[in-house]
Amino acid sequence: MCFSPQADVVGGVVISAIGVDAVRHVRQRRELIALAWIPLLLGAHQFIEALTWLWLQGHVPRGAGHLALWAYLLIALVVLPVFVPLAVIALEPTRQRKLMMTPFAVTGAVTAAVLLAAMTGGPVGVRLAPYHLSYSVRLHDGFLITALYVLAVCGPLLTSGYRHVAIFGIVNLLAVVIIARLTASGFASVWCGWAAVSSAAIALHCRFARPHRRPAPPAAERLLPGS
Image (cartoon, rainbow, N blue to C red; front, side, top):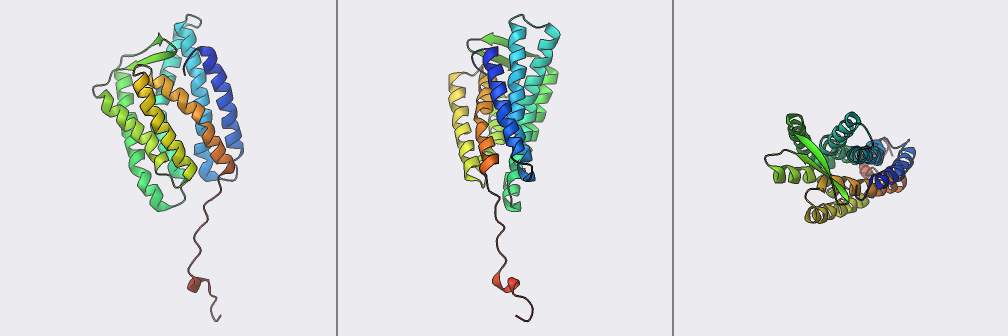
């Protein structure tokens, strides 16, 4: 996230609290469980970046800093493009809508595999930049991979049958465009920070969303024999 390790810690505490609230309100709504865990995951992500900040500032050992760097990138580049589409698919009540979103999940899995291969092939790095951290992973087709990543993460939100989830997707897509224009080197850090903060909307959806009502059967099917 932007600014400082202290901002990451504060953000992590707030977002994790939001995540706990979201999880508490889905005990009887199994379709919402994966979605409710996203704020908790992103809250932990902020704590990990705070540790990366402290390493670059010389406050924690090199080994811990490298571990934090890899953990941050694994969540940002490998976990999120797979987990977010699957969480939204699990949310949807109809088979047709789930099938519509399946290509996004496939795109996310492929993108995550490409990014994981790039990470393991190395090198990966991070450096201090004004008001953010600049992460680097060697990619041959960086623009294409980034576009596929955004498609995998935002696409399911935009096509959701829940209006609030779709609005959340539109806001996040606009945020992607703005962040990309403002900072290319800090995209991973700023985008994940924004996603963490905006995940409060997920908690609100988990708290207030009503289950979809199943369509009533045709009148002829409701009639009892002999009625």
